[in-house]
Image (cartoon, rainbow, N blue to C red):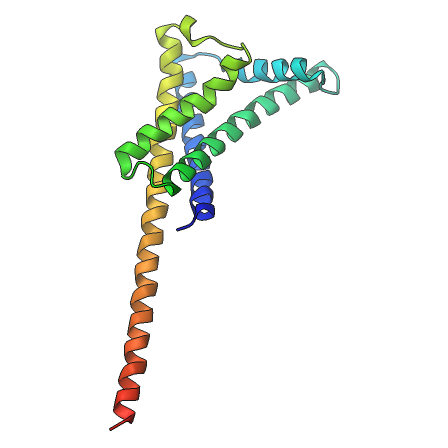
Length: 184
């Protein structure tokens, strides 16, 4: 399997992982009665500040756009982290479910939190235990789902390749057998 196929599988696996991360996050919010994180919107504000851009519309429209852009940044981070995983696997990086899950988790934590730290939107050194759990658990759900999806796609591709090789071999044998029978 080539680099492009690995990257595509990684992106698809990252999308599945992103859905799992969102599900884990919303479940945590429902169970603990906690509000949504404001860091995605604050990241958008910081990016706007750094670029000198502004969101159009009245206050309600700007708030809706800020919320949507924050969510889209998260989706891009999740799909992007999956794509990175696919690229690493193309280079013969970690193989198997446990190493792939560990790589997916580390990548998701770095891609998900790194930009917000760089933008000075958050500082993990100041997080409480509850803050860490609210971040680590959804990223773990992301990692397990992303790694599982990637492994499933890779195994499915390997099975399909074996079936193609078997059909090709049978066809060659059949042709060879026919030409042997015709020569008698």
